[in-house]
Image (cartoon, rainbow, N blue to C red; front, side, top):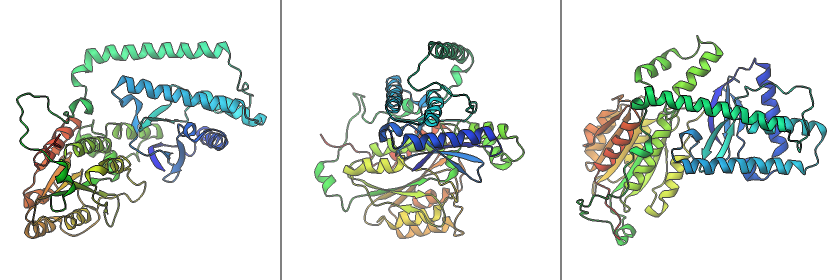
Length: 437
């Protein structure tokens, strides 16, 4: 089970505690009575970190993306349609179940909340998941209407709120056009170059045949080192000075509401993790098919975690593994020294060219060993092993790895630069030959 998101939670707020308990009762009631697919739209809440945070979890696998960040309108509409279908399935199933009066009262109060416009909808591999804020009023002792009852007043009330919401969105769009249009960040999808060129003047010098793919034991390999520490949750939409201020001051001196808003602002999408995943997945598609790729993840001390090499036919499994990466709730760290050492031991770097690509926003905070000394050892013992680094926000703390091995450092301070620099890092390795047709 992976965490989708977390939010500040006041354990002294009795209303929120009551709503938390009610919602867990709803989940326990629904799980044995509805289909697994329908139940999957409901994120599972857990109190974490001394009950000061509420974590939302799901059994679905993949990278969670907020529905408002989906660019393709057709995809968004299909996901919204899927969500409504699942909600309808839940309601229709409950109607034919034999329930006690208390159970029916509880569900009658909560099923409309599942359709609330105040909910946050995340999408995981085209599957919608609902996350609540528990900001709605507590369930009173008044008996709610039975499930099959649908009053006209409730219908028009929803449309009245929807009309106000649409008017507000229209106002925001007008203000966006007037004041923000020229400063809006460029969506990642628009920045990613096509995997094939349509330029008639370009000329394919060579390509990779199926025979080369099958007989690639002695050809180059690549290890991607991916920083999966908690700092990767930080947003890419704030200047570095604001990030450093947030990290140094924290939220101790703020009120609960101030701290909640501050954290949400400093970790909002697109963040370092979500953007790095997206550009990593795009880059894998550009690496020529006879290059086997392994993944080393930096999760916690003392050592990094290494995968086996993925053959071209299994790259979808590699991409799924990257998509599932989520920093640990506790003891998250960056064992970079261990990661580089493991990666270099997996590669030849003597008889043929091999490559390491590091995607990270910081330095090692697990080992006291000098990473530049390790860089010298690699350069001396594996002279044909090149290390390229995509340095998120430009920390410059591990530049020696690239300098000593003939690689390069690519600085990325925002989403646009992250896409551009990742493309350069892969392109400069000269391992992007297409598959022969």
